[in-house]
Length: 196
Image (cartoon, rainbow, N blue to C red; front, side, top):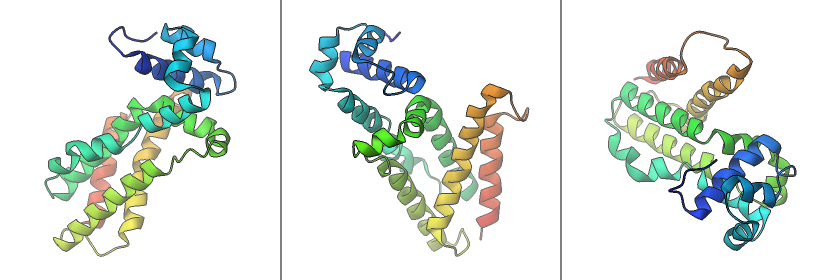
């Protein structure tokens, strides 16, 4: 169940996210969402109007916009290894915090496409942030000349891959190395590979 200090809308979104991730969009009813959120079904409709609107709100709520737009750039030191570790940890932590919404993106891809929900905006925004970072680092003489879009995509994929490996741990871990150490090692290796 959800926390008592959350707004009704937050309770509904948290309940819907959990249920849809576990049971699927079709398998989750507005009655289920209301029961899990501890509100009436009428409250669900009053706040969102439809299940489609709930799905749209879930996809909007779990966005990379918050860490990027709220102080992440100010934490950069323009020291490659430090910054890549910071950025890798941000991406990994964000993915952990939004695991259920990410699972919904995979499980409900047909429904998301059918409803015209744009889920490319967040990864595109993150890629743009990384490309701009690598551009600036090249201009400062700190990274090799490369296709910075490719660097951004590979860095994002590395970090997302660690998150996906964490999801697979449900079947038993492949390694005893902690995910935090994987993130640190990946950022260090990436930094050393592109350092000027």
